Amino acid sequence: MPEMQAKSNYGAVIDAISRFLAAPPEGTPVELIDAFSQLGDKRFLPPRLFVETVEQSPVAISITDPSARILYANSAFERLTGFTREQVIGHNESMLSSKSTPLSVYQDLWDTIRNKLVWSGKLVNHRANGEEYLAELCISPVLNSDGGVAYYLGMHRDITEMHRLEQKLRFQKSLTEAALDAAPMVVAMIDGDGRVLLDNHSYKALQGDFRGVEPAELFTDALKAQIGSDLLAACGEGKGFTNVDVRLDPPSGRMPRWFTCSGVRIAELDSAARSFFKAGASGRCCLLLIANEVTDSRERINEARLTMIRANMAEQQLVQTMREAISASIFQFQVPINIVKAALSMSASAGDKPGLGAALSEALERGEEAIESLHAALPGPSAEQNASVNVNELVHEVLRLSTERFLASGVVVDWRTAPVLPALSGRPNALRGLFKYVIDNAVDALNEAGLDYREIRIETCTVDGEIVVSVMDNGGGIPDAIRLRVFEPFYCGWEHARNHAGMGLTMAEEVAISHGGSIEIDRDFLGGSRVFIRLPYPDDGEA
Image (cartoon, helix red, strand yellow):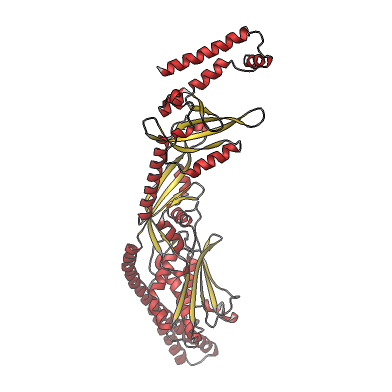
């Protein structure tokens, strides 16, 4: 009822102004008539429209004098505050203030508007019934013709519900972050450019273990090598993955880390204005990566596997030793047989006694029979199928198998690997043998040099489509004169040959060549020796 009465009063005022302009009383100042007449000019809206616009605005509007005494309040102000115009007009705007707002906020408000600037902020007000609400307020100074403050125009709205939703959202965000940080697995949100948008404590701890290297890059590289496609591109196509095992090798030769990884595609909603009416419009695609570390269980499996590998390699070593011994015997037999052949040829051409020729022929025949028997006793090479192998894993297995020898020889091993290597197609046992021959050769070089400090450094990396394994030692080095001869069968350059048959590097070279690779000695390396093992790996197209 009061609201209808107020509107009627304003309508009467507008009608009175219109009648005044139609027939102004005699003696009315010209300036006053001009001022009212301008309101009816085509450049301006009629006074009634101005008043009705403000009155019907959904935003609470109030006008005060420079001391904040309320001169006007619209209908929305009444609805929002619960106060009628009669209750607020003539009173200070502070009658709405709640004691919950800090004094510093009011101080900032007055400092701003007294400097003739617009102030925007939030205040805690109360309604006529005492209920508090959060008001978003904008106060603008209205200046007179002299440039001084004549009035203050205030507009405010109730944002209590918005604040409640923001607090709820903030609480849910904090709850989510706390849950993620408490989770024992590594969690990271990765965008399409590979940037990490969200992570947890386990992720940060892993980053520290890898000396600041971004684990997301290591995981995506390892998963790409494992799955064979770009994960982020696959994520954009709506594909995910579950329970994919990957291996990461920390720097400085520490134990490898194993993770079971899963990825979920998360579509980020498009925040552009043009997408407002497109329900469910997605922008970028993100990948939620969850990596559960299974190093302990993997180690138990690897221990059992290592025991089996140790037995297989011992058997392989035994067979290889037999092959070396028999091959060496054949090689040694061949020398006197060649001499007998030469003597028999000379005897026949010189016309010697028939008895001597017969004796030589019989010796030759018996010798060739012995060689054939040795060839028959020579164990054949073991047949092994190609498989997808991880070079880091194979080298690490060989190092663990050689631990006792390292300790007995007093050798320090510096194991520096690339965190992720591409998969290689090869024969696992043969490659283990290759690495063991080269590492054993390095230990022999250190024992031969007799140094107090003995070190072997092993590094892995990728160069131009090849996996490169370098084995370095600080022994006496390999003279340039025998750099190529060390790969010859039965050549042994050690002063203390012991049980060496001189076949280790020969067989290592055979394995490398059979895998399309090579093995070479770095002639420019100083302070010991360095051996490069190069093994080509297939590119994405070949894979």
